[in-house]
Amino acid sequence: MIKTLIVATSPLTHGGITSVINLYKQSTMWEKFHCRWIGTYRNGSKILKIWYVLKAMVQYIVLLPFYDIVHIHFSLPVSAKRKFIFFILAKLLYKKTIIHLHCGSQINEIWSTVYQYMFIHCDCGIVLAENIKTTIEQHIGKSDRIHVVYNPCPEISNEANYNKQNYILFSGRIKEGKGYKDFIKAFSMISQKYPSWKIVLAGNGEIEQARLLAQELGISKQVILPGWVDGEMKHKIFSEAEALCLPSYAEGFPMAVLDACAYSLPIITTPVGGIPDVAIDNVNMLLFNPPGNIELLSQCLDRIISDINLRKKLAKEAKYLADTKFNINTIVNQIGDIYEELK
Image: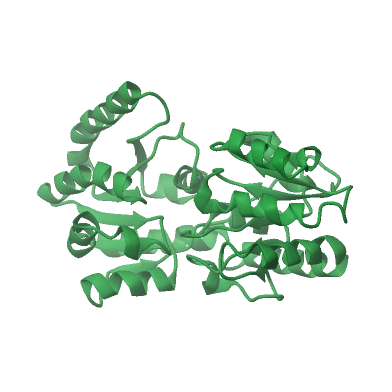
């Protein structure tokens, strides 16, 4: 019997890592490998954050002797530093360690001694794309301990039926690196051509800045900012959307794209992070490069809105990815194989 401690952000925190682990939790691997989730970070005040990580540390120290594998999820440097003490404690007790990196194309810019140490001393490293593995091996040397495991698509319930609406969706944290300003600016270039169309930016973050930009560009009535959505509201927004646009500057493998695949949505995005592993421009996604090229992004939006046959083709290909490469059973079987090999 293998028992696994999952160390990651809190179940109460919004974001990609939490979404991925929630999908794991709904799968067969959770009971099979007796997984226990320890949350080390949640949104809130500084005092709340400190209290939360201290509580997690106490819980971890109590549970660690009774578990075989410690599976640590992290992304940016502040996340890696927060998890480092958990990693060291696991090594001191001779537990098998897996480090699971959720950032991507920015790895060279943020590489540090903490990343270096953990990737050299872990029993297994998991990354989200082949190019990320290659980049890490440039820092630590060739390694057969690094595995590429994609994030999974959610399984969608079709119980509630929603009709398509004329809008293109952005989903995720509204921040500079996700390209939300580029999305608004690019749509403003064609908004008068398509007065019945809107864009919806679903997420938390720089909501007020996005609203002010839409006002400056004169498209306030065509820009919807519902805030963070989940549950039935998320299901409704994805079901009604005609396409998804994620013009990011850096990614690991974005959950917004995986959600779009699950909902059979045409996708406009940039070839960053793990996207190039699967994306074929004009075949299963529309790609524009480099990130920040508002003119090219505007042309992609124009094509998606004006060409229903293109939308249908890309939607079909997106669903194929959801059913094959990103299928939840495929992904958790890969994780399970790693657990078995380590034990």
